[in-house]
Length: 527
Image (tube, rainbow, N blue to C red; front, side, top):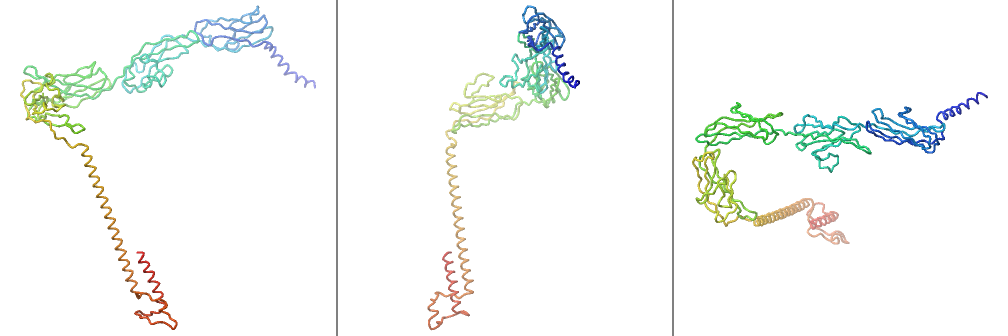
């Protein structure tokens, strides 16, 4: 019985010991106030308050459990204690306050302190480096710092903030920053420009930021296949050719090479454009060989089509081809005259009206404002055909590179205003409608005729069938024109004598015959 009492008192003793160790429960929990973030090497203040605790009180600031940081005694009933700390790298952790008053203990809640390293030395690095790349490649920009922690990042493209908002003007560029990186999976020419970033730490007070310098991103375009052409000019009594190599797309600098009969005869580095010129020897009427040009960049090498260096002098008999142009109302509006030349690589054209020369644009303004030249003077447009524009037109041509070359001239062609207009659209529509109505009427008549013919065929078939039925009936039965009344067949005294022409013609057969005749007549009347 004694052992049982001792076992019951054991838990009570344990609880009493714990209460004595904790200092009792009559002291209310103190309150610890302090920052959650602090810059390295800065000073912070922790305030521990214990309202309702009588002096003397002992305040202890503890870190990460039971590591004592500082102690303060309250002998004047201030009911609070202030702790000043200088932040170092090891200052980060969880802090709480322990208050001892009259043998009782009180523990506050914890305050988590993070040590923030001020940001500095912000810069933008790129992959590839330097940030020069071709269209379609991947670009990665990184916002790096020399020092700093607990950072946030903001990106700028051409000094405009890059955000994930769908209403941002930069949204079509698909610039999506993730942390301190900005990735473009497939760059285009629109991604070229200046990029920068700002790294910083946002605090309730005294936020700090550091911005980088701008980094210029260049996006290079791939080259297009070069086009090759040549011209000729006369210098004194000799001639000189000029071969032009040109790419319509690409990013300089590029290098052009000229090959004559598969031998390199020249090269040129284009630093600001995509065109190069090469002088070559030229003699009109002679084949000077085949040329090609090649354009080369740090990523491509493309070659043009071959071109034969042959200059054919102007010759033959030109011919003027006239085409009239009409308005919607079928009124003559303009005319186009083309000078067709059989021979000549570089012709120069000239036009005349009734023997009066029409000036070429290179020679001055035309005396006829309604005349317009195109295709190097090969085509003459008469934008208005009036009585003044009517007459005989001629074209002539010579070599453009030699002002002393002879002219070749075409035969005159008459161009005049005619009062005869083509059939209007309205008349054509009426004629088409009439033709359509006649076609429909003819079709209806044909259908009616076919239906009538089919009806006649059906009627004749019915007549032939009826005649055949009568013939088959006459082969098996006697035909009596008018059936006799039954009173004439059977009388009181006996049977009258009836003229018979068939075998076994008795009264019973006549009754059956009359019945069949009635059915036959009823069927014929229905038909």
